[in-house]
Length: 401
Image 1 (cartoon, rainbow, N blue to C red):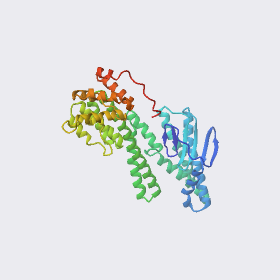
Image 2: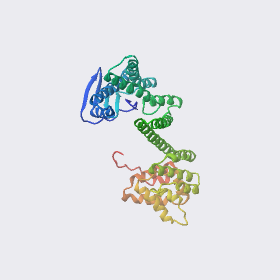
Image 3: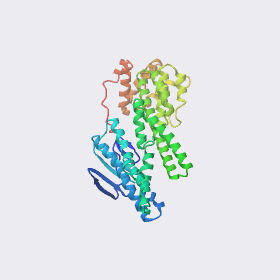
Image 4: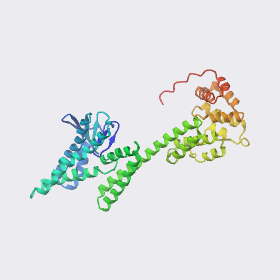
């Protein structure tokens, strides 16, 4: 888990930032790395102050404020039993723990410790001093206003329920409790709605920079939501494939129906359509299987196995049907068909010839195809045909996937 000044939490340690110039120091037992980009971006944000002294005061306030924020996270992590290190970079700060924090209450405490540290240790005292000091100097007034802006305004913004802000992380933790660990999607939806509303408010108020950040948060949550749904769709397609190969076409069709609207990637959608078609074949619904293939992406086509099964015997010759499926077995890059494939080949009187052709293809080096068909025949109870392949062949090592 890592927490940055925007409140982002990751379950794995992030990649290191640039290897350029950086200032290294320790605050207690917490190592701190401050990259050049942090100072450059802070100076850019304070450039409107117009003087070198003003920009220097602003950069110093930002540096101290972000360090206090990150130290709040780091101290909370230490109290949770893990050490931490801090990196300040061009996009803010990052507090990286040495290990995972498994307690939800402790994770929430870590999330809140950052903004509350800045608010209570710097922001509130600065507000009090601004209200009580009489005729402070220009420099003192600039320091106090900068501290109030960075530690009050930004701390309150950081507590909004927008991922990856600290408030967004707390919102997700709460939603995980309410939804049996399924809080990711509703938390992203809440983030999109709140970021959109904040962006409209900021732009209408003339706060262009704040509006830009709100739109940025909206965009990253929109993308994350789409990615999450794509991952969910992939899981559902895998479960659908397992169902159809386990002779449970009804479950496969239900899962594919849920997955297809979110299956945007061409390859994933092609597999989902193929699984749906096989499920209809298993139910004896060839017409429905052909209709399902109408949703196949234009860049892909049905496997030769499926084309063989669904081919119209009055249009496609017996030899061509056999070639379609044998070519897929020889190519060894097809989706393994379900047991319904074997039953249909047998019913259409093609099974023996397909087995003969694949055995004869030994010179074409298709051990994986033969092995897969042998296993499929065994699962379908076609033991006589399976034994014709002989004992299982050792499969060549293809190396890492």
